[in-house]
Length: 238
Image (cartoon, rainbow, N blue to C red; front, top):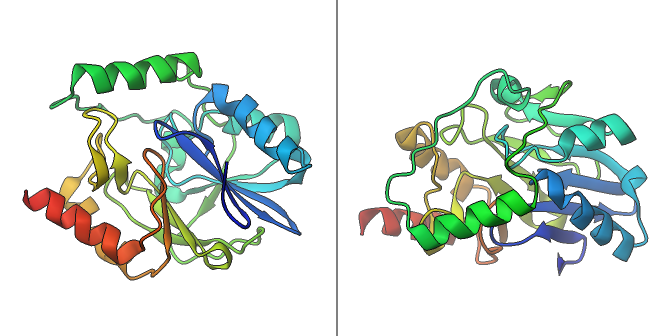
């Protein structure tokens, strides 16, 4: 799905990944669920491209619903997968988190589990090799993505800022559709390891100044980072 020139989404409001498309090739941000591989191929084909045009995959963090087809892309097509050092072990399946389902609504949770199950989300293929990145890195990939540490959801959660498409990819630093409740609009994401740290990281996000704020779950947001953070803080106070 085209969002803007050079900016595409695969998946939907339940689980999404993104493509930055340039004349020099494609940078992929996150890898969703394993069954979204077909969605990736279809989006690439609509652009006259193939996985051979993907120059790199940047993960916003190492959770299972963001690394879905990453190992397949790495193994079958030689695509380097980048992840923050603090989440490298998570992406390799060496550490895990314990999801907190408190406050879940049956309908929203059932929809998430149904979609995840349909798309292979109940089986995780962890990465065997990753390239580690750090806060402030500018990667030698199409769009020159900037890595901005946003710890909290996980220790190595990052934003991936691509100025050329006026977008920042935020993973689960926030959500615009809560997978456990169905609540829509900018708000804190569920399953966050350290909630106070995640809230503090939002100040860094607000300072980026990108128009497009693209989460792993929920609708694309195009009213800017500052407004997204303002809405989250308002939501948290309500």
